[in-house]
Image (cartoon, rainbow, N blue to C red; front, side, top):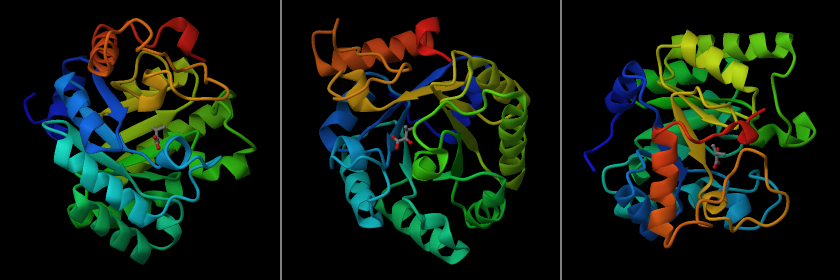
Length: 263
Ligand code: KIV
């Protein structure tokens, strides 16, 4: 695959061509995802749940994320490498800059941070120093205890308007990408149409510019309750790489997410 950059994602948006994103935590799966054409890989703090067995992403440390980033960076081929800033990296601007620096040194090409409009200052400081940022809005798993669980966000018009406004504010502050998690499809479409930067969705409907899933969900190996927005692509595939390719192809053809995966 040709090397994917932020410019590639912008061009995809301008051409109305959806792009595929997937979490990755090690070199072998990152290589398989790249071979399947996945354009963006995320070293997500979901690793706390799917690799470490925690009930949330909160226990994940900067060292954990750096370790998995180095692993993925060695295997990833041309995919763009996005990496999560862990819980409390955004406690102060000083810590945000220092943690983002560690992720970039480990191989990140884009850092993802959770937070609403108040993150604008931190995002401004990061982008000023050459660190591209993806701002994660909607259901932000690092605030799961405050949200009272993994629940759809933006169902009522006031909260939906707030999420759209926050997205605008963070793009103005310098965010290059927005990620929207678990929001109604109508809000996914509204945010994507309102912004010039690419919007990646997970449980945000079919009209966002890119789609992302957690790798374990794509392979159907997650235990416990399966969220509505996931699909097991391995069920009809004959290998892991084939499952990744089917996911990629379905995103490209806008076959995924289907109505049954949306809110
Ligand atoms: O950590 C993660 O895997 C994520 C995705 C759910 C988008 O943030």
